[in-house]
Amino acid sequence: MASRSNIADFSIPVTDVPRTASITAAIPRHSPAERRALITEIKAELKRQDAVLVAHYYTSADLQEIAEETGGYVSDSLDMARFGNEHAASTLVVAGVRFMGETAKILNPEKRVLMPTLEAECSLDLGCPVKEFSEFCDQHPDRTIVVYANTSAEVKARADYVVTSSIAVKLIEHLDEEGKKVLWAPDKHLGRYIERVTGADILLWNGSCIVHDEFKSRALGNLIEQYPDAAVLVHPESPEEVINLADVVGSTTQIIKAAQTLPNKQLIVATDKGIFYKMQQAAPDKEIIEAPTGGVGATCRSCAHCPWMAMNSLDNLLSTLKTGKNEIHVDEAIRIKALQSTQRMLDFARSLDSPVLKHGNA
Ligand code: 13P
Ligand code: SF4
Image 1: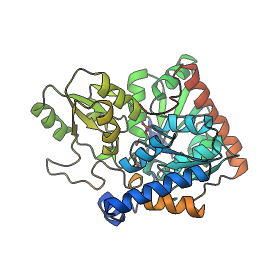
Image 2: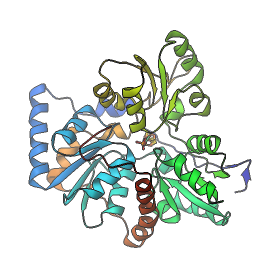
Image 3: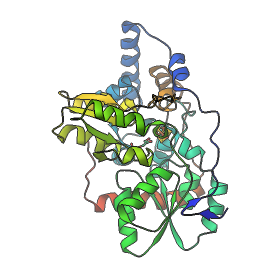
């Protein structure tokens, strides 16, 4: 497991990735009346159970709307964690992918944490199993271990710091100023981006997001020629060549803020298209254009929508609330260790003076 340049010379293959189109085709279709009835029932269950819904921007508009209308929250992975941590509800219902539910449990052991489905994975988490990761860390004892939130509780337990894309550059800058060398996992594109921006000494795990990996720089270049006045907004999990074409690189919340504040009337967006729901609300007068995941001979599997995020539906949300199934449990010894690195993330975020948005949203 030696490293070639500054990236691990092995990777863990992530197999059996579902096609987003197959997942969405399997989600039950409802008439408008059925949909309204489901939403009413979900809202009543949330109230009855003293539960709050915390949803990621990549989940469906229906789930985001329910979260907002019931005093819950829609945001990026950092603020989802912070909101759940500060909210008084005894049950947190996390609509997103498993690491988000686990982070909520790590921070809130006294709360019941439910998810609409426990099958919602993340390719970054799957591509970073704790055994191989631990061995990699053991080989580099001189490095501070920083892991992206998109990892299992076990991997967080092995790390010195957890971080999300919204504060990753700032944290690595800070560690670099302290003279620390960093071992970064799992996302190699985000890691390379941070390395380029900060100049820090970073050793990279070889993982990637199957959604952002599909954005194509050549096709994006053609789109930019077609829309020369558009601003290009890119999530840093995208490949380097795509990031190089960006006007703004940032977390999901930072991308929405840029959509609001930039003067450009047209925005080309390279991240999961679930974000368009909030982005369009935040910037109603702007035209949002999807960055290409196919074209120039390429085809896509996720086609800019995470298959695992797409697994969250009205039906499984209601079923979870009614049955109490899909509860997140984290082994207590692991949780205590993972809490240290996760709490450091929250403390660091607080030191940057970025407030938690109480009710909502970009
Ligand atoms: P954010 O922290 O920007 O919400 O990213 C989470 C994620 O999974 C992006 O793919
Ligand atoms: Fe993971 Fe990518 Fe899905 Fe985000 S979009 S949850 S990084 S697979």
